[in-house]
Amino acid sequence: MKSKIQDIVVKKNAKETIKIDYNTLRKSVLTLRAINHPLRKEMIQKVEEKQKMTVTELYVGLKLEQSVASQHLAILRKAGVLSTTRDGKFIFYTVNKERLEEISNLVVELAKHSN
Image (tube, rainbow, N blue to C red; front, top):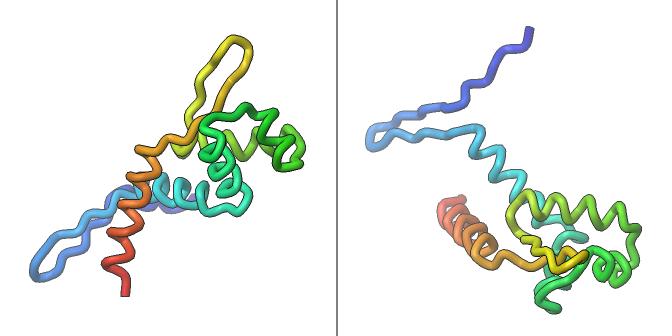
């Protein structure tokens, strides 16, 4: 039987108590991995340039198979980086700028405290 990792680890030092929620940490890592993939970076950039794009426009423009494009778009949607809107039979992808700003702020904070 595998041992279960605690969801929250508490580390105490003389001045403060630090709590790490591993579920939140895991989600944060997945989000950072989602946007740090070369193809997904390119997809974000293309959508930003055009303001909105369909999956067809993306896979044709990037010379990908439709299934590959859809797979990567799903990862970006799950991370909250891309949003979708429907217009008739078309689904358009747009960049969620608020989410990217949140991620950027987190990265800046992490970088401040790294050694």
